[in-house]
Image (cartoon, rainbow, N blue to C red; front, side):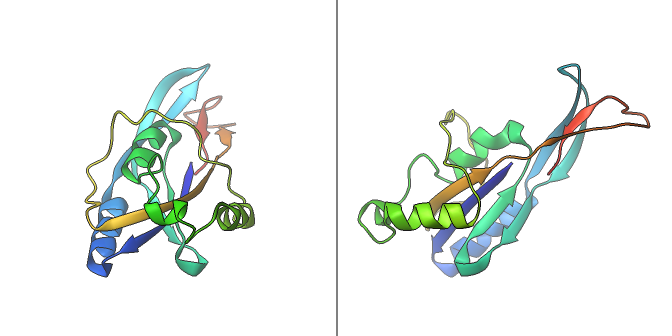
Length: 145
């Protein structure tokens, strides 16, 4: 799953957050007939897009934690006050081919240092599943990141 956002604040604080994000490990699960058969530990991927937009990619099982930690449920006041109007955010979201931010459970978060960093959440993108046709995991599906 892809999480698209614009961080801003003290440069050293934003850099520290990006280091935390890049170091985060996630479990990518492999399923067969709806049941988990295996899992792979891997780091999420962080991409820098044009105009200061960032994208974080990780397995969908951690989506709620990532969106809570990045403050997708509580955008910074600048978004509401007109600095980034809803029209501009809608344009950016459509230009980046993102979906609106879904409702999510914000009871858990990741241990990223977000102090002195504000977020402008843009949207999310969903990944498709791949089904293995051969090998050890034949017939199993995994999220394509």
